[in-house]
Image (cartoon, rainbow, N blue to C red; front, top):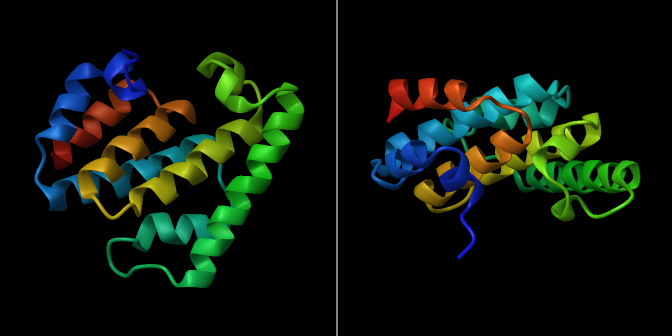
Length: 146
């Protein structure tokens, strides 16, 4: 059985996410998404606003569509740079290309919006790791929130 990236890289963090209260998991997911955007250098105003205010109010449909379009465009640019689909590459290969890193950070924002808070936290963490966030930084957020 293949481990999910979070379990493989940070099993203790994965366990904390799995045992978290739903509200705490949601707060964690959005904090992780904001960190991913900062690490990746995301400058898209919409992505940053959703990451910042997603807990206060759910984004409008137009904002969600813009996020999905941005992720798709960045993924396409990433694939063009890699010469292959990003899913076939390891983290080190992805992190060599700004578009790949930024795509994963935007994906962390989208992941934080998933209906199930625990799934949102796990997927946002996965995407943040792919975007170049350090495990220690994610654990530090967990120490504050979970």
